[in-house]
Amino acid sequence: MFQEIMLLITWLVLTSNRKGHPLHIITEEGWTTQPLLLHAVQNGHHSCGLWVLACITAVLQGFHTTGLRERELPAFRQTLLRHILYLP
Image (tube, rainbow, N blue to C red; front, side, top):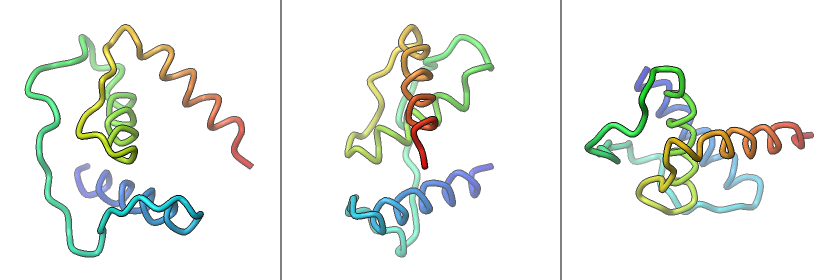
């Protein structure tokens, strides 16, 4: 699963760079991982993917971690849905 996530992040960075939204993240030199959080931020197992997307969003915007709280996930989910629906 880890390799798939790293490939997704690499693809997102390269796509953003190609579309004129440079992220200035070097993907060719390999990746290292660091924990973003040292405590649990979710109560159940049903929102794991949403938390991964929230963390990816934060990192791609230049932050080290997401500031979201579990109570804010429904609004984040709606924001993602709106972005997906507006894709060409």
